[in-house]
Length: 275
Length: 113
Picture 1: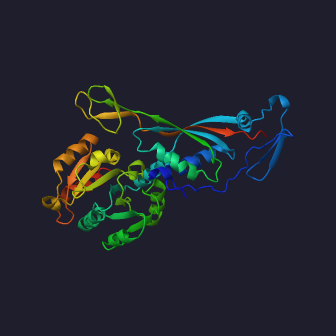
Picture 2 (picture 1 turned 60 degrees about the horizontal axis):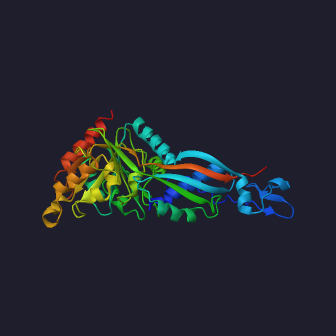
Picture 3 (picture 1 turned 90 degrees about the vertical axis):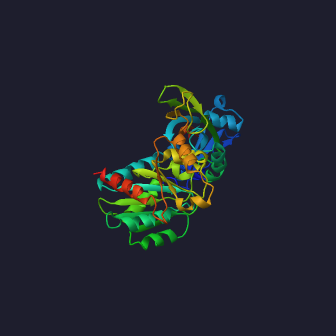
């Protein structure tokens, strides 16, 4: 199965190469369905060198095809699915260990009386994070990508069928921990949220510009640790705005609760603005 | 290593268009700001094409430079990363080229039926 778009690999297709039979001046072709076709050439068109001979038969097809077109089409379908149900879908991305799951469980616990939040969890292996989310009482689906380093639109489509989130709710998609690959894959979400913890270094936005450029929101987490780590918040913000002038920034600690109100307000307003 | 998944996608798309014919050449267009490394695609290509109609095909990659237009002064600047600062001091840049990720053309053997 293709990790990019979910289409199936067709490893079965086998075709026999063109072969020339110098003595007989003919070719034998085996078609995919097993049909064997033999045909001959006159001496005037026959060139002995096989590679040149093959060129005679080559045809160039102009494709101009976007490699991510299938993923983007599925993402557009997901977006329509969310819109039709008035669901706010957020794609949470970060490096491993930035605190996505802690922020998510805290957010669910604090907002569960106001908002219905369900979760699609993405990890290469284990259902550990999904179990943590389940303890909050929230609906959750775990997607294990195996060797895949990001979620794609097809995985979200299949995850949604299982999750069956209610109308007028929020779906949080926790992407695989990775600051590179998830930036490229549209899932059909309404907004991308990149999470950066103060233990990681303030220059991440310029080191991994693609993901910060693609995101609508940056959440700086673990700010309760600022007295103990060498992290310049102002510099981090300058870098983030340099990469993405439109990015909205929140500073929070999911452990102490500092700054979470601004994030919650943004989530609630984003859901309302969809009505 | 998203290039592996991307390359699997390339193989799937080309296989579909080749309709069973052997593929001799694949020409890609990859923008310098697309976060796709051509060398990684080349590395994956040989692996992903094994046992398919693309096996042994030549891979050609056109790398498109990054070009941005400043929203403030309208000036154009070349970019080697997906952000930058215009001479006028603005960071409000729209990317014009450099994000391409496309299969331009393929060359297949005709079956001479």
